[in-house]
Image (tube, rainbow, N blue to C red; front, top):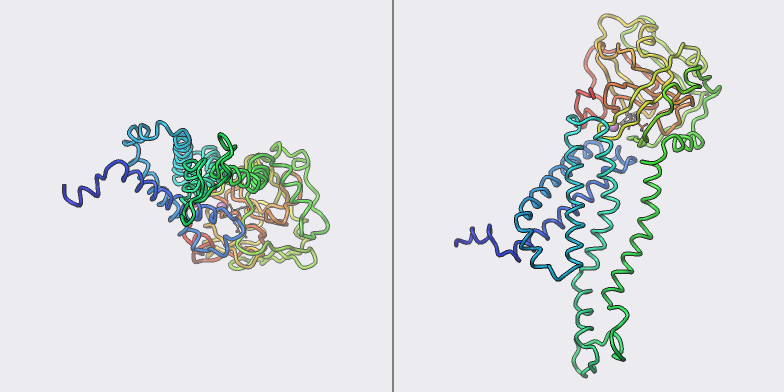
Length: 418
Ligand SMILES: Nc1nc2c(c(=O)[nH]1)N[C@H]1C(S)=C(S)[C@@H](COP(=O)(O)O)O[C@H]1N2
Ligand SMILES: [Mo]
């Protein structure tokens, strides 16, 4: 066998060690990139790095799939090797189960346009839950398997009943050799400590996450409404359809995204502007804005990262009505949207902007949109991924040249149709 062949076809033991090491490195890379990606509040700091990080995460996932594929043909021999080691068998089962869940849900999220929003939402939930369980498990596994933990505990069994020999530095009596079996070995002790410690730390965080992201929907918006930092007076009077929440109440949970600090607004200085290639530029204060006729619609909300919120009852001004008020000139080819955060923008073509379900929304399920969800006023573009749905909308400009939006400039697809 040449060196090359030897490298490609190592003895099973060596192969498993090698796969194990690579798997550990890649899981670490996936954990770090995935956790950073999932933190909504640092999106702005990451900028274009977010899109890069997502690509790294995806390709690390592909690599981890390749490792699994290289491993699987050897599984029978591996099982034979560990047939008398129940802990290792349990560990193997857990690891394979975790990898399968991460890989399958990851593929759906990666190719989300080929799956329905329901599949995407389910895949994201699986991906997240597996991470909440799997990463603490991986940490537990790596701590409890560390070599320095292994050696003394093994030794302690061997020297049971022995007397320490003076001048033998490596000998160490872990517990006095009184009689019979110890209650636990040092290794078991550490395993339990690490395990219980991990559950004590991660458990409450996980439950909180579960509660805000998967379980309650209406009530989490209620708490956002209570904590709302906007001061918009008077409060908008909901229409009858909003009061009765004709959509029955939204289903699912918004993840709060922003690329800046979350801004807050007051009716004292809030304005809404339409400018650019229009015959009647518009500049409304809050009270005037509330005079404009509103409508109610029910629509779904799909983020390109995989989560959705269904059956939102939005009340607001149809974009087409506002554009009509402003008198769009023929020269105008694109509609540009400005967020009051001073950073986020996006745009639609003139033709796209005519869709009658695009709304400049003021109420969600009969209540003012809270600050965290883009209130007092946000854009809603139901048929497109919601990076188009600009939060804290304060300005619209009619322009001739195409404008590339915040996320599109950082790598999101120009084509945002769901
Ligand atoms: N001003 C502003 N608008 C924004 C964003 C943002 O970061 N800033 N994120 C967009 C993205 S990617 C999504 S999915 C939705 C999320 O809305 P939510 O934070 O209300 O859930 O807002 C969109 N509009
Ligand atoms: Mo998004």
